[in-house]
Length: 118
Length: 111
Image 1 (cartoon, one colour):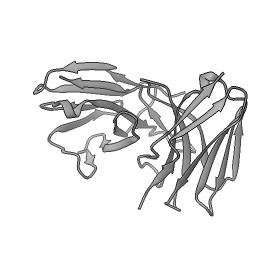
Image 2 (image 1 turned 135 degrees about the vertical axis):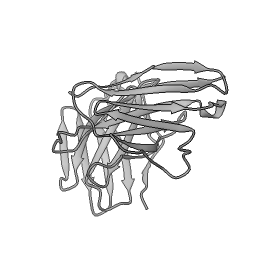
Image 3 (image 1 turned 45 degrees about the vertical axis):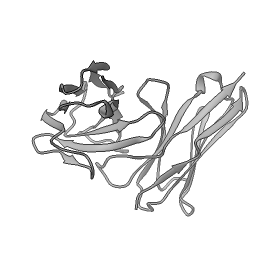
């Protein structure tokens, strides 16, 4: 099946620094990728929709200047958490939609990135 | 509005059947999904059902969809300790859109 990778899988950074998380579709092209955030024992909340070659669409309440998204190629989207604070500590998960299109229009999820801000 | 609800916890004995329930509000849902998440891991797609289907079975998993009541269930037959995880119900409303997730049901299987 289709594979989506995320890098890094786990990162610890100091408050005030920036962290970049990569999401790659390994064997398919994805014009659309989604970034979710999951707090402990909570559901996945959509943060933004990343479209290749255009600006990301952010959900209400998500600061676009804080969570920078770049989708420069059909296989890579990056999420940069700028000036991270402890409250940004969370599990970030991306998903990628296969542009080739399947019957069920499936989205493939990455394994997630655990961000801890100290 | 869009909302997906699940019960938060389910506890069963090994060998029993588990039934996890989910309700959703958007009648224009196209696909409904069940994902499994083990501690510290990402999401694993277990199964999905198209909105014009009533039932789908895949080995130990049976999905039932009652579109009239907007109710989805996942039955796991012969539940094993390895099935212990959080199970998320999710819906997709339009083509190419993000999924809307429930809060997840924590399944605990005791031996």
